[in-house]
Length: 157
Image 1 (spheres, rainbow, N blue to C red):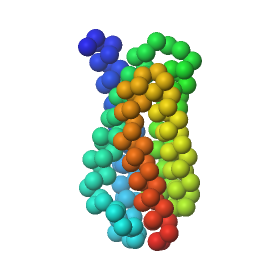
Image 2 (tube, rainbow, N blue to C red; image 1 turned 120 degrees about the vertical axis):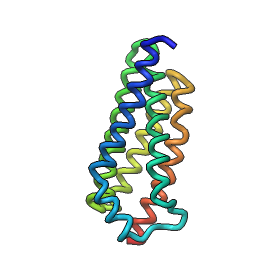
Image 3 (cartoon, rainbow, N blue to C red; image 1 turned 60 degrees about the horizontal axis):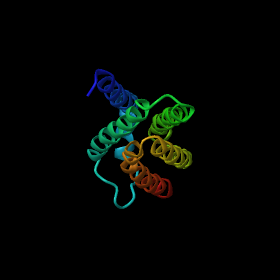
């Protein structure tokens, strides 16, 4: 693997993970309040599952973005990376809407927009690098599960 490739993969993974770490750090107190006070739907996993799942998902997002970045520059590549950044921003903001504001209905709408962006990102990634798009499948599945959980929390609270 060339130095350029190694740097792209490291930057893609680190950048994605840092977004998640900052969101987690900034909402840590609100997450504790949520865990102690909110009724959760059936199938809600224990709290320790979420950091593990998100660490893996952010790494897969970063790997996919790096694979796309390493392709030849083009308007399609720029669009795909732009949508990647936009969905990462939506992902970051959802934490505050859901945990900090506990605006569960608004968070669900936001999450559905995030899911649409993530589907768009995966489709754009697939056109450029099929593996990059397929790396997003666990993220898409998790977002669908998160929508179920978010919707359940909204209805129960």
